[in-house]
Length: 191
Image (cartoon, rainbow, N blue to C red; front, side, top):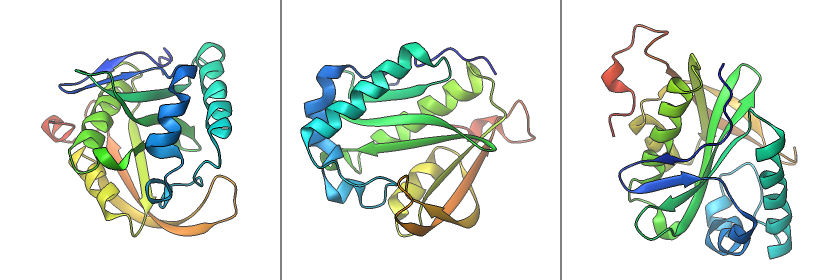
């Protein structure tokens, strides 16, 4: 694997960039404190702007300290508006993208567009052989995002929240790098 850290990625409508401490207030207000956004995520809504700022400081520190740390602020290319986050986390058995968008930006294709950019980065720049994604079973919209990005449903599993206080059924998806599998390369992020 070719670790290069979080580098800027662009799509037709988005710029994925590193977070900066000044993003904390927008992050808190746009998605991190919204119980509807975090309903199916593995972390609860942030209780205060200070909590978001503290988490964001840790993310910003990790950019310089961990060459295999991948976490992007999703922004609208034209306006620079911060609308969400997407990461690529090392998990046992591989790497897993995870994302969250503010409600005002749902159902517009932004999550799929950001996920496709991360997939292309993971397969191209990092040379990963495959990725896996998962979502809480009732979160069908997230499953559609994964499928639109080329992921294929693989199995159901028991998952836990990051704080291990909640357990739930999640649907797990896989995506093979076309260089490592006999998969139609056109099926990978044609967005």
